[in-house]
Length: 218
Image 1 (cartoon, rainbow, N blue to C red):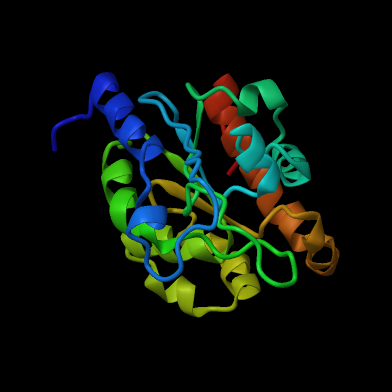
Image 2 (tube, rainbow, N blue to C red):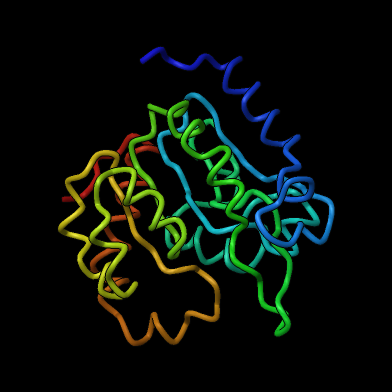
């Protein structure tokens, strides 16, 4: 496979940022506001954060994880905001590039399906250097685990799938399946202390290996 150049990757990102499919040719109801795709990639980033979709604050600022969920995610990773925002080291590709809007209860709607169908396969093929993927939530799990032949984990309840991390730890790129870092999941974290003691220690060591060159724990 021909390696994607920095220029070709930049051109692909420009096409994504200009995308208006969910407004002009939607699957179902059109996006209720002007699209503002959010994606951060580079030819050198070894870590990929695969989230769900931007929220209201990210839509307003264009900065991914620019909210309390991002604060918790950075805590999980053991890095500061400057490192997190360094696209040379960390790529961010949500399953939906635009804020999908709110439902009747003022909760975020699911990621728009148009993004995955139109862009994700091409974008993943353009990022062969990625070594570690933080898979956040159900929608990212269903896509990234399927593309690596791990569909069986998508059939499990989320907690069960996360707890089976040892089974997919040897897969390359390495996958870390995470719950959404929303503060709404504080109760889940309290009920599942093994997530902190088993998985987050592994995650921080893996992030440190890429960010500082330290060896990851085994």
